[in-house]
Length: 171
Image (cartoon, rainbow, N blue to C red; front, side):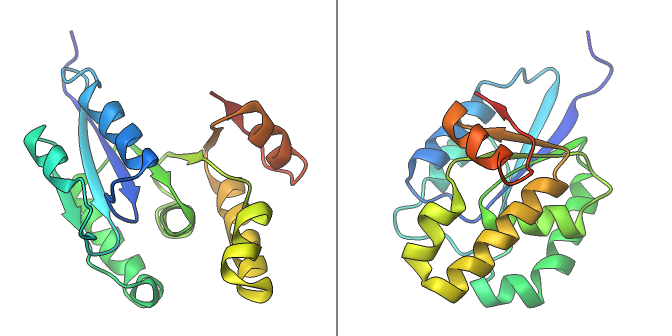
C-alpha cells in the first residue's frame, strides 16, 4: 500500500474540552493509520477540563510546550521549531491564532493547513478590547494569508475571509 506513514503535526493551544478539541480527536482517531502518523503539539499547559487523556487512550502522541501566552512570544518559536524538526511532518495542521501565527511565521518550510472557525473582527475586539482585539484581528488575517491552505468551517466564514483577501475553502 504505502511505503511509509506520513507524519502530520497538529498544533493547538490546549486540549481543553471544547468543540474544536472534540473535532480534532475525531479527525486523528479516524485517519488511515496505514498512511498517516498524527502527532499533537499543544502550546500551553493543559487546563483542568483537558481531553488529553482521550488522545493518550487513542495512542496519539501529545507534546506540550507548556508555554504561557507571553511565553509563546518569547520561547514559542524556538521550542516549536525544535519539536517540529524532531517530528519532521509532511504537513502541519493548526487551529487558533497562536498556533496559526507561529506556524505561518516560524515553520514556513512545512506545508501548512489552518482551520478557521470564527471571523476575528466579530470575536476578538469584543472579547479582548479595541486595541488588543484589533491587533489580534490583523495577526489572524496575516497568518491565514500565509498558510498554504485555509479551511473555513462554513460558507459564511469563507465569504467573510474572502473580503479580507484570504482565500479559503469551506467545509
